[in-house]
Image (cartoon, rainbow, N blue to C red):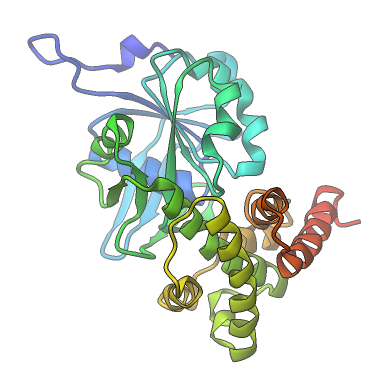
Length: 316
């Protein structure tokens, strides 16, 4: 793949299209790849294990079906303007061969993953490219390898640092249904996203129920206790949270559709390893750094690790 060949120019020779590689075509990557392809403002390629000729994205008010160019061998890739890293956080290392080929000093790598340490996790793998952390709020569901469904979970679908790189990423989304917000306090918002995941992901994965399970009074009580621990850790880590942050988080969770799943729920249904370390594990690790006890999150992490290890070992 030749970045110069993919880039279009106008009559004055100015660049009008960016070259974008989407690494990971699951629920998150499928939605954003489909949105960008439908807008047709940039040259998109998907980096995947198995190619798909087209991609269907269900939006609340329409369905897009787009042609999609795919690469299956990192050796066939060459540098691009943007990489959108859409794998699960625990799959980052497996993306290293792609990143080594796609990234050079001028590349920007948007990391659309859960957790709070996007830059630290990815920077060693990208050949001095610029890492752009992105918080994903939309709910994606992968219905088939070539079919994803989008649900809007809040007023904004993606949140970025309010800096030149964040603004450049937001500009990529022009013409798509995806809404981006820029923020000067990314640390606080990253922890707020982690709080949502700290409650919804473990509970849905361990009960094998969608978010309707959060409507139970006893489950809500458990979630509030889990969140109280996480909020204390987040404040110690520099997040500027509200006095009633736990209540606000629960209220937001209960606005999500009852039939929506979570990434960890879908991974457990499919028998895949869970993203436990980047979510609950990040809370437990930060608690240990700051000397804050997290017994409920530690208990959840133990159970999640057991489920994940069983998936890794083929259910044994």
